[in-house]
Length: 356
Image (tube, rainbow, N blue to C red; front, side, top):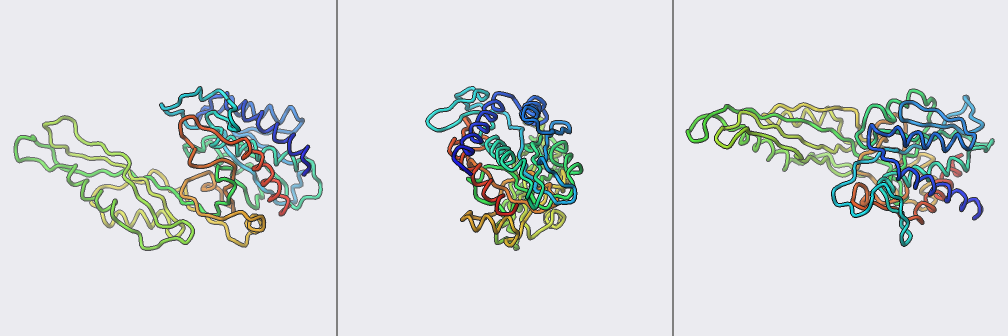
């Protein structure tokens, strides 16, 4: 790739990212951002498809007889937190940084993948087709994002999921199960020795959850982690609460299924335990997969990720990799280094070139 091509792709990517930063795109409210991406491809005479707020394109010489590589990242963002000192929807360059909501998570990844897609768009000698999908509802693991789109995308061999990883390869990712728990007691007057306090019953279960260690520890993902993150009980100060509700966030490694973890929890607690869903599975791609081998040959480091992405919803192998730093996701005054976007484009092109 010549410096001239690299610079052109870089400028296109940064220009698109600045436009997207200026468009509020909270989960389930991505319509305008999807239209922006749609317009970006249409202006370049690339046939563009859309389902709800998901936009996807295919390489110019798409061959239905070939398998495809999917390049995917998301267009939705979380809402800006209260500590912002800058306008979250104003894309501002300062000392090599580009500030703005979604710049790091995951706008820099998305536009870098789009630049890589453009680089390969009209090549005719590729082993795989290339599909690029800019999708919705990733931040809430919603059903109208990549999950809704996947039935439209056939014969995918593997994927690169764009999330900020400092361009290292997440080849494994923990799954997520959220469970809602309800401990029961019996109401009574707080001034008299009556009733059964549901909070105290919940405390016994919370103590077990906070101290239990699952014996199977993953080489890439470490142990299963459980954290009580929400709790609610009581109606007024002088009434013994009859119920205590709490929520547990569980990050599951590749040694357990969701069903196994749920069964273990239910065996050890007395409260009612109801999972919100079982679809966000842990994932793993083998070290000898061609895309992983290509990354290893480039000196990229494989690791296991504790954070969730749309990789969890993909029924085919995938790596998670992108410019930016996960530690800057969802922070106030979010930013990405411009040089990281440039390097991201170059590394995406290099790793794809190895397998295409």
